Amino acid sequence: NFFGRQVSAEEDGTCVPVRVASVHRGMVSVLGVELDASVSSVLPVSGGPEDRPTVGDWLLIERESLIPVRVLERRSLFKRPAPGDDKRIQLIAANVDTLFVVTSCNEEFNVARIERYLVLAHEVGVRPVVVLTKADLAENPQTFVQAARALQSELDVELINGRDRKSVARLADYCRLGETVALVGSSGVGKSTLINSLTGSETIETQAVRASDGKGLHTTTVRQMHRLGAGLEGRGWLIDTPGMRELQMSEVAAGVAEVFDDIVNVTLSCRFTNCTHAQEPGCAVRVAIRRGEMDFSRYERWRKLAAEDSANTEIASVRRARPAKGRQKEVIDG
Image 1 (cartoon, rainbow, N blue to C red):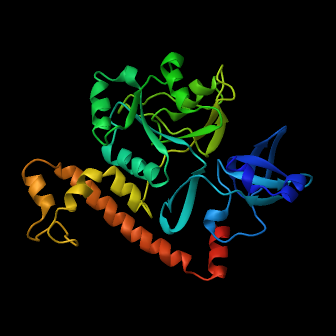
Image 2: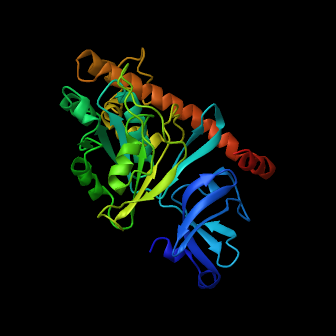
Image 3: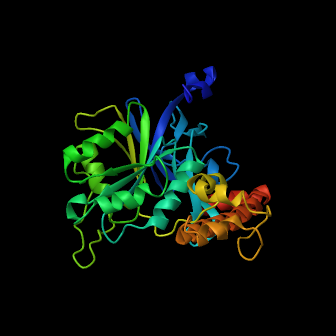
């Protein structure tokens, strides 16, 4: 209903709604009722880089010509500053209900990286679930479960063996009828294996774990949407994403505050509202760290994320203030 209400009676007669399954240079693959096609990604009117279609978007196209008309308003949008160029925005996925933060029970497990994904999820109002893969290869996988659950109260954490269909099956409960789950995580953590197990196919290439360091190898190269299958048909959709080597934070102040609410609550007790938690008298943060009530490494991660978000948000504000001609060039370059 959220999307249906956006289509006017006139558009209902001349256009059809389709969902973007993957994005390629200048084209998008779309799925609709009895329709599986590739159409142009160029829209008649585009006000900026966030207006272009991305995976998970609902797109209106003309019934006969299949020419795109407009992207329907999104329920959620994951984005990040483009790697190597924080002046551009890279769209990750749209209209996601649940985010699977996938990481493996080995050297790849990284608390700081998981926190960044949690911040993204909370910023856009999407439920995060930490999915720990390769449980069968770890001597004590419960240590990873405990470390993940310590990041945030009431955080859902699932420990699975991605190659075991029975182990993976319970993840389907997060992907009910009409809902979409996106998978994010570093290369080689088992996202492709997980997708194959959930969809009941072997269409996505996977590679074995590297013996030297226990890490997997990169296989996914484009963001793509898949239907949940193998006895679970029609229950929902999965969006696979390539591994991200860099995940910069921008315009996620609310997400940072929610993930690190324990630290934010302590800062409210500082004597000065603009306390930098360095040398000011009456700093509640320094007192909590000294008493062992606050983990210093967690505090450092919070401070780094908050500073990074502030700097990148300022850049984003300047970018939006550019004249229309500059924004149009950015869309083309993107």
